[in-house]
Image (cartoon, rainbow over all chains, first blue to last red; front, side, top):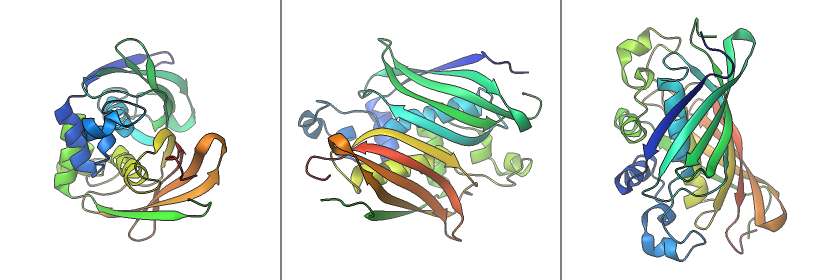
Amino acid sequence: MLNVGDRFELNFTFSEEAVRGFAEVTGDKNPIHLDPEFARTTVFGRPIVHGMFVGGLISRALGCHFPGAGTIYMSQSLKFLAPVFVGESVRIELVLTELGEKGRGTISTTAFRSDGTRVVEGEALVKLPKGAG
Amino acid sequence: MLNVGDRFELNFTFSEEAVRGFAEVTGDKNPIHLDPEFARTTVFGRPIVHGMFVGGLISRALGCHFPGAGTIYMSQSLKFLAPVFVGESVRIELVLTELGEKGRGTISTTAFRSDGTRVVEGEALVKLPKGAG
């Protein structure tokens, strides 16, 4: 049984190889993610991780761990507050904030850089696995 | 120059290989996406694409095409309305719905299955590339 306030954390390091892999798989080969020379000409100064890669990790945390197998993803909001640079790590933090009707749960989904900067924040609405809510 | 009402479409087919690739890169190896036998025991009946993979394609369409290079992603909402099965194709449709202050743009982001079913809907807020707004 899950209770409001329960939380889960997942750590992930965005290696250059991982970011290239995400670009290959999705076809998102925007040079801001892949080309240091191009990135130097932008406001970021160096290659940044695809924001939606952080979204993919939130999805992984929800579907594989918290609540885990059987979870049905209904919606997700994502605010991209600060860039994550290639090579950096993030901590994804999920907190169950509400248990609703029909086995639904609201989960706050936040990503932090290792220096504590909040880089992505948002909220997921899920249908909980049977018996979890 | 972009105008309200401008639109862009991107088509993508989710091969088994692509879905395995997304699972490898993000670590989201939930068997609902990868294991037909497991999927048969669920409400979906067969493997489904990671919802956030559709999110990755929306990000690709925004960052690579519309508005394209120089776009800064500020936020994204995603409602997962219906499953996309592995092997199926989707059409991502972006429509510029609002031009705001400080070079900001609001873009509706919708994904359709080939039978016209709306599978994902949501909205992106972006900072447009210089000169685009």
